[in-house]
Length: 277
DNA sequence: CCTCATTCCTGCGGGC
DNA sequence: TGCCCGCAGGAATGAG
Image (cartoon, rainbow, N blue to C red):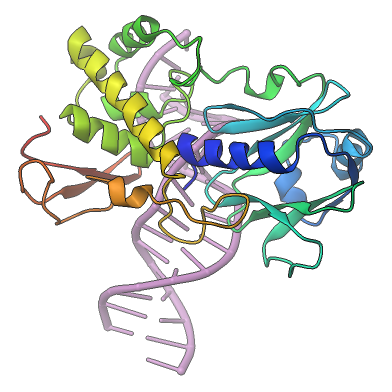
């Protein structure tokens, strides 16, 4: 499931394969994948055809492709979205919903999405920062992210720590997997009230969030199944680096106690009942 | 403003 | 063998 490291891996792939190329055509075969583009498919196509992609950007789990018009193609992969760079002769994926062709007749860019939680839109004037993602907080790997602001906001919230980590307005890019991993590393139970964390504990947690995200990026992200792959269709390797997530019943790498799974926020949480307090 | 439950979607695996 | 159900979960939405 794409979280910050997976989206960053996709962004890096797009940087290599689509920057500097001019879009010659776009075909949208599933309107749900552009539902955030209110003006519809025709308008979407009109705004991108003939435009050149100038760079690739990311904040949290959102990514955007600035165009030479000053607009940007902004996207979110949701649960199962993929951006694939594929030769025109490659077989069409079952869930391919959007296809971009380029003037250089080189490889196509395909948006493939089984569960259709993801989607693309064109952000007018959004090359620098799409207004569609202005409400999202900074992600912890951005230069302008300020540790003490996050720590203060976290400690002011009246909610569970894990819920706060997943709140994209507070800190963006962290999803269920990396939240569980950072909490395990910091030895903090996710259901603890965030306003009871000491400054030191909050700082420690944030440090582990940054560490686990950076390590996962180096491994090309986490792939549990075929739903997350990079732009060339390859899996990431960070599943081997997971200590808690998805490891119910397996020994905690620190103390050997079996990892527990519990329902939290309508999803699974994995933690060590002994060393996470 | 804040917090939290609900909704969207498809494939897969378990139970009977 | 086949059917049903639950599960996976990010973010928008609306209720309270």
